[in-house]
Image (cartoon, rainbow, N blue to C red; front, side, top):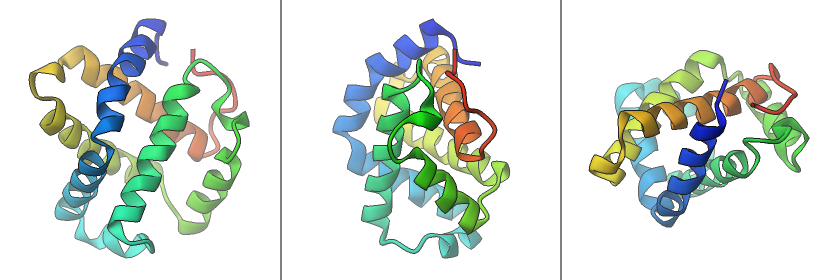
Length: 139
């Protein structure tokens, strides 16, 4: 479970991440497909569009970390899409590893162990919602 301090870290770092959303999104998917080329077939959108959709979903998560994420507009559609595609928690773990690598590349020394842990908790909160495992606020 994410703490209020971790929520603050994520929200404070997000403007810089959002400003680099194109680079981070492309780097995350490039790393994901480099490590797991078989996953590329699961994505039907062009990579730049997919990267944009991912960062928008991440923005929704950041705005909703202290709320009921599953009740936010558009989230149930994302849940249905992920179920239809057969996305599993293991897929999300692979995605987290790729995202963490992209964040580390973009943020450099600012991507401290504390910030990494906070983002990991935020990402896992999103995973629980998209897997239909969580319907309450994350804190």
